[in-house]
Length: 367
Length: 157
Image (cartoon, rainbow over all chains, first blue to last red; front, side, top):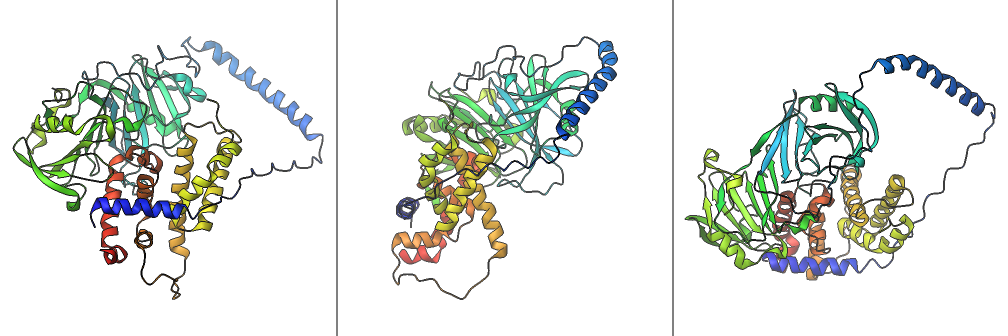
């Protein structure tokens, strides 16, 4: 049975089986807990009196040291970033200036797992504890921290909730919680909020997030090791001789530890829905068609090399190009580019050699 | 747009979420339990108002992950039985496919359900499962290979 037949059979099966569920159990919120009987009515006023005494004592103790403290501005969770622009549909400016990363980081006991960047907005790395065998949900590598550096104006610090002022190497910082959903699916963090340590460095907000709950000391250790450097671009194994005017790189991603390799996503310049990627170029750390031989619909030539034309149900046209012990997998994703465009893109591809040292700086991959 | 109340969300989406859960786990009773547990989890986290972007996607994520966790627990507690369930002598194609789906891992099955029943793009499936887009693709490819190799599907060919 070929893929398209199997896919159609699955559609029929799911539709048929879903139809067997005709009712659903109603939801009723749980009853609020019954208030406990207060048998000792004197406890509340006594506790209040003790609290007032304790607060007064703390103020008296802390006041002299607070008066001696230097007049450094303390961070505030409500203070806005220089020019907040968190709108996700904004076209990233000057996307071809950098297709890489500005974060350098070396933390004893940890290794970099992934690097990802949305040009014009932020770049992120994740850290994996060396020797940690806790498998992530599907990737097999368990991330412990994520570090993100935003371009000036791209982060609104008011999203940090419950912030407390702390210091990292004498730099004011905020420790609180912030939404994790800023990664467009390429680096899956937790849904909801994560413990977050944030500070500003040369106008750029730096966020350290913990995947394992509150961990201020660990996060400070990571933050202390962060260096912001000149962008170091991704290196890619191909150049494009043709690209529709509407498409530009919107995300780059590099998995340093697993088979997934690296990715450049090209889209029409709008982010906001992860599904807007029009053309994906991925380099897998394995040989052969990444979807298995059954998906191969034929062979073609790309820049003089044999490549596999793939027909995978649920996808547009895609092509796998073997390159040494890796495979370049490129294909249409959704209706945002036509097959005619894709044919022209394939015709215009110029491949690097098998050896990654011959690969191109990603900023030169565009026509 | 104001955040929906949990009660309103539950009233609107209970049936679809139960169907989703059923396609994932293949058991009506367990599907209802998964959905109820999901609403309870939403209530614990957000209270009466679902202040979360895309609450439906969030609920699907909770269901999918709860089903994976439940399956892990089940595999270590369920007993083997000699009883053979009633099956038609000549299975229908959809019956054969449904039977073959039981042989897949929970994550593989979830990818197929989201792709072929919900028609979600891989990026959204990745977000629901908390994995990378490439992993979704691998899971789907392996699921297809396993389905093709299953006796139920082979008998159809």
